[in-house]
Length: 129
Image (cartoon, rainbow, N blue to C red; front, side):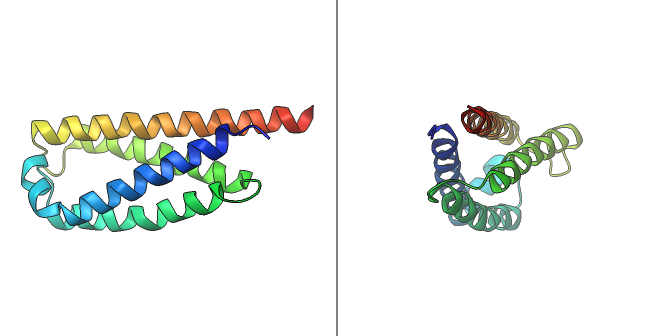
């Protein structure tokens, strides 16, 4: 079995867990700097923790669930689209640092979606061979 999907899921899980912890624990400092209310950062941070758990659980299986991996790709795509909406509509009044942070995180999440998609494609090719 190709390890691409498993590695992508693990990396996404670690990034999501660390991001969630930093957002939740550092909301008071990060909020004013980014132009995001601390309560929003706490909510997003706490929401990322079960997401990270699901990614971790799937990556740790003997063979990752393709359906759950597709869900991870879809979730990552939704995050990127939501980030674009936040940047375009700017409902929070982001600071320049906040806009840069949203772009950087969206690009990282897009990379996870692409990496996981590549892993899914390799699983399909391996299964067909």
